Image (cartoon, rainbow, N blue to C red):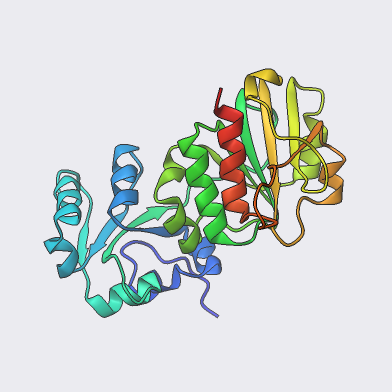
Length: 263
């Protein structure tokens, strides 16, 4: 079996494979779809390996503006057909504009907690929810996001589509062992807030806690794991006023971040 790692330029066949995690890990690349994320990558001085675009994207005003900026850099541009764009994207209506980027070296060990709010995601396996929470984290100025083991991968195309480039604006640490990490930092000046629909109180403003606040969210199906609940300094929840008994985890996380940051 051929296990050689392809080098740039990748073939179209290899680029299509980047929709699968095993090939992203093997090749060391991921792709970003759409003008907004690509613009943020450019503004964040990320290393873009290449840009793939369709003739349709070239004709759209916003996409053409981004392509104009790209041409001011020494980034290879590769025109592809609409069918190739749909295959790479996995969507029936593709944005027709992709950036190919190297996956940076990632850390999963955490020694210290950053001042401000850290958003910790415990086994949230829906990539759309994870991407939306990343976008909310960037909007509310979260210091760091931890993706616990069992949480959807940052470079999953669905995560990136929902995040819309916001992973360039907030540090994300993947593969975090939440139990080990929370045990290690329990003596630091931080408060661990764990969501729990069965008990707790609405969160206060972050400044009413310690210098660092860790907000732990769990999956909709199972909530935060029992072991992580034992690490909680406080349980928090969102009071319900209407007949619906729960919120999507991305919506709930956004509401909680708003409460933590709204004076």
